[in-house]
Image 1 (spheres, one colour):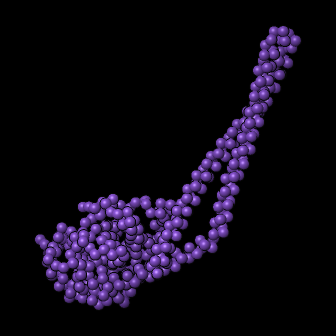
Image 2 (cartoon, rainbow, N blue to C red; image 1 turned 90 degrees about the vertical axis):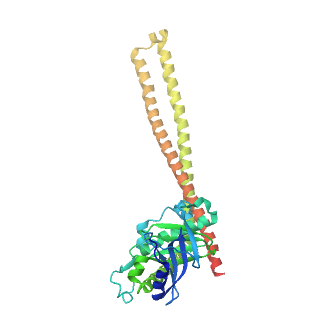
Image 3 (tube, rainbow, N blue to C red; image 1 turned 90 degrees about the horizontal axis):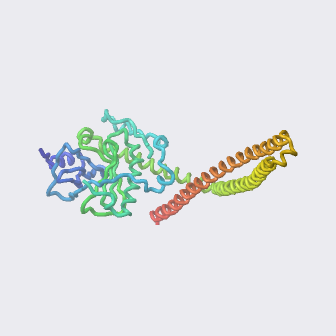
Length: 365
């Protein structure tokens, strides 16, 4: 049986909140953008599917549809540097305690947040620019989920006509908002669900404000962390150039050793041919009936044994040369392929850094 949206609005109003926008699917309310009268902060109130609030004939109602968005290996950093280790990410972010003074009335509030980055519309129907932005937002929310994984409050971002949110199970979902006022900016929301609102409405605003301040603090702190990383990269540029030079010299060393082995192989092949010829001529000589009468069997055996012994030594040396040559070529091929991959990756990421700094400069212009 559908529930009364007007009763929910009344409850919100009594607790100092104003419902501003409704995001509905098939007339059923999924999210409500709510504004706190106390501090004019806004948040998203999620309505679980078991609660059927029908929203009709009220202002600011927007229909939403699921976007079938799957993470793609189409991000420069992930493609060319690999996925960041989630354990390291989680441990680089410190914990933020929700102020115990604020939460004295909240007996069940989780004590801290772990911080650091720890149906359907198909993505192919979305423009390339929006697809890139959505992938970036996905990764951003994937980092942010470590901030709220131990609390019931979550995070969402609205960009243009897309609503991207961390669900209660820490999965990430996307919606497209129909007929929404498109803004080319990202808006950050703390989200809570209806059940938590009923349970904690007296301190809800304070809790979410604490989470928001903590998140802002972490993001600002990490800006300086990232800046220090870039500064170190600039300081190490001479070492980087030296490494590049050494890599080039290493490949040249492989070329030199390979050339030496190839020259040795030519010499040893000529020696092998020479002794094979001697053995052949010796056999021919001793096979001649007239000749065999002049030389006894002992001399024939000695001559043949001498040539065969020398041939065995030559073939052993040849085997060693071939093995060494093979190993050198394998090492060279592995080296030049790996160098090509790493240097290409580095250049792609550096180009991305330059482009990103161009975007950052626009924020302050």
